[in-house]
Amino acid sequence: MALKLIDYGSKEYKQMVDLRMQMLRKPLGLTFLPEELEKEKHDILIGCFDDDKMEGCCLLTEIEPGILRLRQMAVTSGLQGKGLGRAILIFAENVARDRGFKKICMHARKTALGFYEKLGYVKIGDEFIEVTVPHYEMEKAL
Image (cartoon, rainbow, N blue to C red; front, side):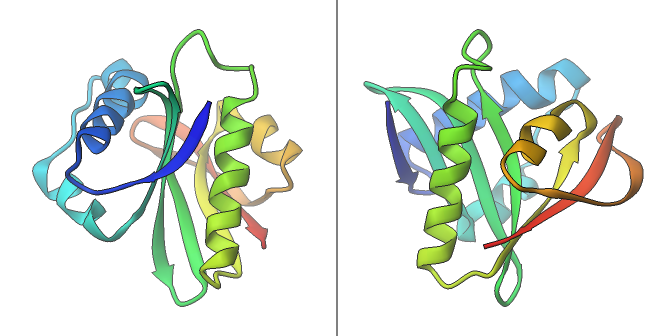
């Protein structure tokens, strides 16, 4: 397993979009708009690979100085629960710290709350609906 930063527009980025589409959007009957993907040009893009095959990913978007939003965390079906998500998140936190960020926040799907809580994220506020599914705001100081 190799964790690495991905360049926007690269072949790894295309794999990332495909994985996110399969795991996060398609099950909800949603797609990505070109404008959404265009905004990712300035994000920190992270992938987890076995040889050249992407098995998991996430994005970090700066929302204000010192604060990143974790978005689009996805792990290939069949590999969930095997530590890949944890490894990706720890890698993302280390990249964020190295770049001087102080906090990561996110809109976490309700079904993933336990995963993020085990890694030190705290639920903020009440449940809300986003992309048709229940979410919670979560955050962690780095």
